[in-house]
Length: 387
Ligand SMILES: [Zn+2]
Figure 1 (cartoon, rainbow, N blue to C red):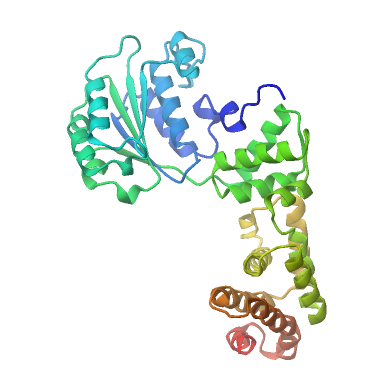
Figure 2 (cartoon, rainbow, N blue to C red; figure 1 turned 30 degrees about the vertical axis):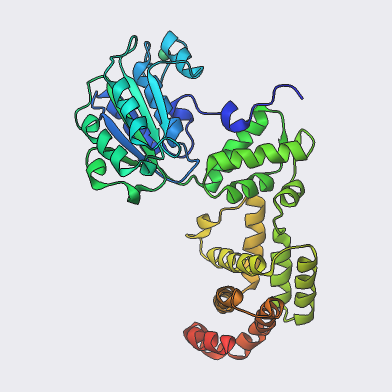
């Protein structure tokens, strides 16, 4: 294999516009640069892997660019940009507070701040995981943060904003980064796959995006992993569920079909098959809750956008949703989530899930015999179903 570079590094955004899913932040930063209202201390908060350090680096590069583009993007061609892109610029200092959290580490940094940049306009100090700094280190840092020299800009990043002391908070301009939407991640992965000439199935990309739970960096490493495992240039849905050990969503569609048809025996057999494949009963019941939730969401045009799945799967949900009454889904959710809550404390966990499935397979007939009062009786039905 020729030099393999992980996608998270190879496709790290080099301009504000290429940052995924954080336009509220990149736009504000660009405006600040344009109007020369740039703060000297920033606090970037948000979950891991959503682009905090990336944005900090782009900001550093942009304000030092010798040939700033009209759309307030770095040119990526001048001396300064080049040195940033090859990580050889002297104007950027990164400190990982997770491993360098002592007073001495901060004193070293403060010492460096005293020297003006040799070339370029700004020196940028990025302190990652800033909440890990010791109290003494925080205090040593405070004075510099209060009266920094004109050329110094501090970007503090944290995944745990609530651990930052108020004296620091009040001195920083705060930016809250979003978890990145499944659709955005999937689209981004699709773009990379195209550049790498890897054929992909849409469902596979959505699954990876879901598994990454809003963190683009995680999505990219899962993506790399599956490319490696699936021997080269194709990523299929099947490869993905095998590699990630995710239960095929088809099982949930099958189980729900059987539940709607009151075929308890079939449901129990499918559950047995799932267990024999090595899946965990608890995960199955949580997945079933999600499935019911997705079917409910499908009932309303307005909420259909809350489905974070590919278009092909969306159609399947819409179809099954038409066969399931809201009463069935609501009561079903009740039974399934009660099973989820009590799963850990149950002595016989298999039986615990089976019991829930038995209740669920009688739900539809129970509802049709009670149809007289319709929606208004929902509350009653739930009680009966759970009892
Ligand atoms: Zn430049």
